[in-house]
Amino acid sequence: PCSPLSTKVVAQFYGAKTIAGFTHDFRNKYFGCTSALLRPRNVADVARIVEKCQQHGVGLVPVGGNTSYCGGATPSAQGDQLLISMQRMNAIREVDVNNLSMTVEAGCLLSEIQSAAASENLFFPPSLGSQESCQIGGNISTNAGGVSAVRYGITRDLVLGLEAVLPNGEILNNLSPLRKDNRGYALHHMLIGAEGSLGIITAASLRLLRAPLSQATAFLAVRDIGDLMPLLAMAQSATGEAVTSFEYISNSSLQLLLNKVPELRRPTEEPAEHYVLIEAATSSTILSLDPAMEAFFEAGMEQGLILDGAIASSEQQRKDFWNLREHIPEGEVLNGSSVKHDVSVRVSHVGRFIELGSALVNQYGQGARLSIYGHVGDGNIHFNLLAPEGADNAAFLEMLQTEISPRIYDLVAKMDGSFSAEYGLGQDKIQLNEAYGDPVKRALMSTLKEAIDPNNIMNPGKVVRPGKLGSEAEASSV
Image (cartoon, rainbow, N blue to C red; front, side, top):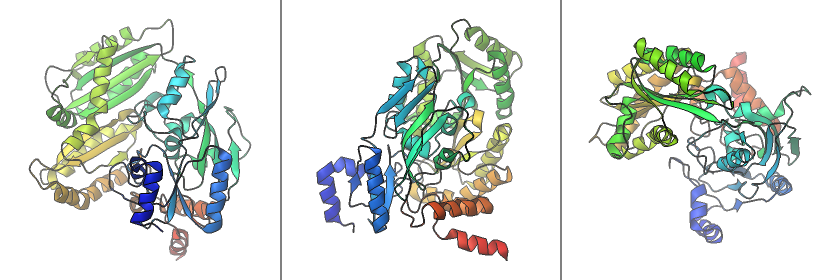
C-alpha cells in the first residue's frame, strides 16, 4: 500500500526528482502514488515482472518520457499499481540501410533515433516538441503525430513490427521489418495507440526514408481561413507533392507568445488574422525546391490568397520560423494555461470548423481568449481557450470546461470529426469516448481488453473502463 513513508523510501532509492517525475502527469492534472518504480534491462526481465504482477493481481503502468497530456502514464492515487520504465532498454539493435529500416528498443529517445538514422544519411520523420525526452515506446503507444504528417503520416504509418510482452507474460515477437506480410492479423497495429492497456512494447522495427538534402520554408500571412485548402493544393502542386508540413497559427496564438517573449519577432511587417508555416523537402541531388516555393508564393500573392510573407533565406531564418511555431504552447502557459481541445476534422473542413468554433466561443465564452493552431495537412487542430486578462483563472477555466467544451465537442461530432486527434484517451478522455465514441467500437475495445487482459493489470483505468462490455451489450440487445 502507498503511504508517505513508502513513497519517501522509493524517493531515497531512486532520487526524489526521479520518482516525483513519474507520479504526476505532464500537465499536473493527475497525481498518483506508487510503492515501486521498475526499470528492467531486457525483454526477459519485463516478462518476469508481468508474470509476477499477473500472479498477484497488481496493476502495471508503463511510463516513457511522461509527456502525456491525458494522464495515460500516471498511477492511481491508491498506490496499488507499480510503474515500469523502459529507460534502460535503449539499444539500437539494427540499422538496415538497404531495407530502409531500424530496430530499436522502447526506451530510445526519439532524438536518439533521429541521430542514428542521420548518421547513415537516412531519416525518421516524426518531429515533436518533446523529442529530446519522449521515448519511442511512448510515441508508438500513443500513436503520436507531429508536424510532418502531411507527407510522412503519423507513427502508425512508420512502424513495421513490434516486440511486446502480453498480460500473461508471453513475448510477442513480431519485429520483422517486412513491407509486405499477409500472415493473418497485423497484431502490431493492435498495440499501436493502445497506451499500454494490451501489453508492454519493448522494441520496434521502424521505417526510414532517405534524408532530405534541401528544404524550402515560408511563413505566410493568409487572407482568410477559407483559403487554407486552396493554398495547400497550390503548394503541393508547385512542389510535386514535396510539402512535409503545413501548420496553421492564429494571430491570437502568436500574439499570446509575443506579448510574453518580446525577443521573438513576427516574420511579417503587419499583423494578420491567419498564418501558415509551410515546408517542403526533397532528398534529390538534382531538384531544387527554392524556385517552386517562390513560384507558389508569387501565385498566392497574385490571387490575393497570401497577404504577406517571407521565404527562409538561411538555415537560421528557417529555425526562427519553427521556433515561433514550437513555442506557441508556451505562450498559453505564460498567459495562465488553457482549456485544450485536441480535435480533428476532415482536411476539407478545417477552415469551417475554426469559423464555427470561434463563433461559439465569441457567443458563449464570456470574453475567453482563443488560441488556435495545428496541423492543417492532417486535419488536427488545437482549439484552446484562455481566461480573459484579470479574471480568476481557475474559476474561469472551470466555467469553460463546463459551458464551452461540450459545445466544441458537439460541433466536432456534427462534422464527423474526432475529439482526440493526437494525444490518445489516457484517463482524461474515457468519458468523452463514452459520450461521443461509437458504441460498437467501444464494445469491441472492451471485448479485446477482457480477452487479452482479463485481470486488468495492464495500465488499469486507461483507454477503456473495466466492465463496460456487459452493460453496453445488454443495452444494445434491448
